[in-house]
Image (cartoon, rainbow, N blue to C red):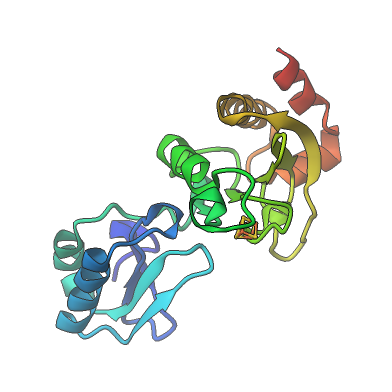
Length: 219
Ligand code: SF4
């Protein structure tokens, strides 16, 4: 029997079958990709195809002996679904598609995903990018949340869901795309340097305040 996370497969409740959840940056798919996922699910007699809270598509109920072939035929990277690392970035449609958008949430989300997805950090690290104040991507309950406003990006830090939910606090604002990417890099480095193992950013902020992050931004 495979161990949790090995081969990108997650043991299911029946203790016999596995789910795989390929990496789908910002949840953007094409008709061709949907067909490929559907074909694989059908061929290997998956029990279910489930859209996850992290906007990925999990193929559930696969046999252990089929896992390698499933990945091969999907031709997609394995999603970082477990462990202490940067998880899938959630992004709303923003100015690409939404009439209320103030900033390009998908554009920044894809860049964050490209740079950080799967990166090992002291704790689980989730990011969300919302194109306006309505916060459809739930930026206030992510370790790092961005909100698009008329004057640029507002950066929120320290939010999370889970057994001890936290609402993120505003760290800075008025940043353009380049500025928000630079700020993200500094925040992640400060977190890497100051957090204890297993400590979410919100818990680190409870312990140390915002100072380490403010100092990193000012450097
Ligand atoms: S957060 Fe704003 S821009 Fe994004 S989908 Fe919601 S309303 Fe549209």
